[in-house]
Image (cartoon, rainbow, N blue to C red; front, side):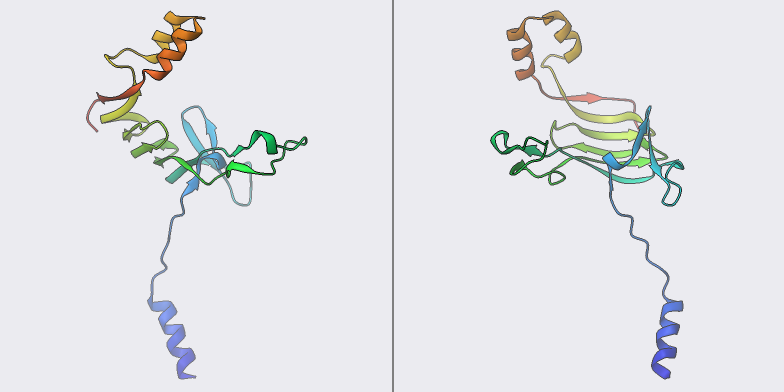
Length: 160
């Protein structure tokens, strides 16, 4: 009897610990600049998501081992095994530290706006990739060299 009483007292005295799991970005609904989470019981009930998110790289199937029905016998990279980006959403918008492991982009967001120092994939000497690609138009060699010439560039946005 004493053990049961002590156990019940311990359950009441210890506050519950809430652990926020990291959310897969693919499981959120993206509308405009906002990421929404579906309700647990009412699936059509969408609310802006707040919490840490991970963006996983899609799996890659070995070309010779792909099945006719779209399945895969052998994966080069298993689906959901490689984290592509990590960040934090507040009220559905990027907020706080953001890291993209594939492109090397990293910096901070303040309610959806880039702020402070950023390291982004860009072109040496400035200029945007899309502007340069328009100049290349249909010249495939020009586009190829443009893609190879991208480097990480330090940029400054308004302070957070």
